[in-house]
Image 1: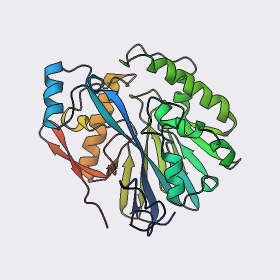
Image 2: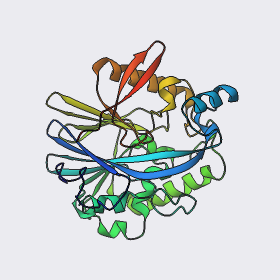
Image 3: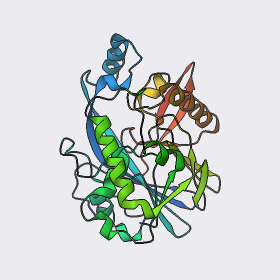
Image 4: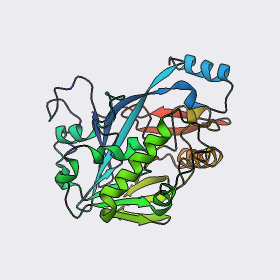
Length: 304
């Protein structure tokens, strides 16, 4: 992975009309944000505890439809200390209802990243749009036998017998999530490296369990020199800046997710640390500002 050729015209994969990868540096750490594509979700899932009229007004104010949204999906690749780390793996191609997502493997190849060069995978959690890319046909055979997959022990425990009672997901999503998580564990069990609360995957690359969205949901903090960056997984959505107390239907503990979200956003606003998240619009690099009782999403200027 070269920061010099992955986000500029003329590099590998430049025949794509819409940019799908964006490179940046965090001190000595190379970071590449990759769009896995977009997937449709029912708009009410954004705010299951908000009055429909208020939710609709927010969507209208953001020039978004009130019925079905295109939900962006991002992963990142990190290179530090000789390790190449894939953080989340996208949706994969096993889900025909989502034909515009599941692009991670092709876009890694377009960026010149060989799957065999990936030394580690970090999973923020085990929803299908974060593990599915590793289940696509032919992917496992291209990965190195010694690949390490880091995931919170609490996440693995949860998916042994998941409780969806506090989530508000439309059918048949819960069943699909459970089947996908089980298949993933069955296929990659020998390569899983569970951690309890926090683990340094590579120099300056630390994964930390937060809980909330799922019991083992985790964020990844990057630090090198004086630079910082947080990959927040599904802890922060676009609506979460204006309404951090709104519950997302995919959250397994909505109250805890809101509490952790507010804490993280306050921390990032205070230390001015950049944020990247799974479902913010690509390339999703942004800053957080405090705006009264809410937050303000400040997209980073595209760096040429």
